Amino acid sequence: MTQNNGSFTQRNILYDFILNAGESWMHDVLAGQILRIVDQDGNQSADTLIYNSNDPSDRYSATDTITAQRNIYLTTGSRLLSNEGNLLMTIVEDTCGRHDTIGGACSAESNTVRYSLDKKYMHSCRDSFLLAAINCNCHLGKRDITSNINFFMNVPVCENGTLNFADGVSGPGKYVDLMAEMDVKVLISNCPQLNNPCNAYNPTPLQLMIW
Amino acid sequence: MSGEIIWDDLIVSGSHSSFVMKRNTALRITDLDGDGNLVTLFYNNDNRLERYNMADTLKAQHTVFLSKGNVCYSDMGRIICSIVDSSCGWHDTISGMSNAKTVGSKYGILNYQEARNDMHHNAHDGALIELSKWGLGKQDLLANVNFFSKVTADDFGNLSFVSGNSQPGDFVDLRFEMNTLVVVVSSQHVLDPSSPYLPKPFALSARNISTAGPYDFCRKSCPENERGFYNTELIFR
Image (cartoon, rainbow over all chains, first blue to last red; front, side, top):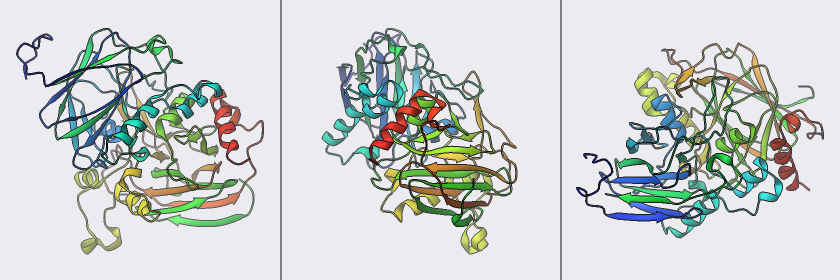
């Protein structure tokens, strides 16, 4: 697939959608198709899970992925592996440069631990994931909500083992292209987190395209 | 750790086991030969949909590894167990576990017909066998703790396995804050560069232990953990 500096005149765009913050999205991406996720306004987190369409218990595994590539960050060339060691998708283009896969998704319960007990009512990625899983009619539930990718999030790990939530390395219009290596279902929560300075306390929309 | 031993057990090299630890009991895991790696998973035994969560554990404590003073969080904002003591300074959380492919490509395939119980095991299959004994399965296999292993990341995110992290006799003491299903597999770390297939044996011993007090070291190690203990204690009121 030739890249044309973002021009889509050569491509047959099958799907184009704006996913607002706080919303979830689940969609099939067939083998050979490319999913583009665009960080429209910058420093938004696209919390993402991937399932083998034919067997959803074969799903994205953060630990298998980072151990196989011996690197904790995801970028162009990263092969996104399942818990069974199968190749689900490959990152074929990335204008951001670094994506997190150990920071996980926010939840009502983890918000009480991380920020304060009175944050429990706030909307969260795992609420979005759970609702999308229940409504997908594909037999997904809480057991299927595992360690996800946070596209456009910067979670640097220091050599001494400390973990930081740093200002984003993303910016308006930056994108990542994922090529499906098998038929997959992609589940995205556009993160509604309001307690973390990484998105300037202002969650913004994502654009999702498939070709 | 003091107090009478309730039970003890040996995890033979390459083998797997699962058992329930009740709230207010503690488990000592001893790396008998050193340089061991014990793949470990935790589930709330009163509601097994609640389980150890790598990301929540790391985010709450701003760390990618575990040692004395750290706790293991569930995905429900509660603390499964606390590391009340550890003679080993680093337990890995981010590297997952071996599977048939990684063991086969690194050490070769050695099956039961050829080698009897010296066959080459892998952690993925061992964990699935244990999970299935409790009605759990593939969907319940998640990011695990690798007790006694150390993996660091450089400025570019490149991972390095640090050899010699655990000496013979090194131990970790886990105090259970909820009734917990524990799954353990003795399996070499996926990033361990040493070439022979040589998983290590571990001694397990369980004791009674008192509930975490108001000034408990793990509770006080960060404000997040104070809130995690509060959330946990709510379900035992």
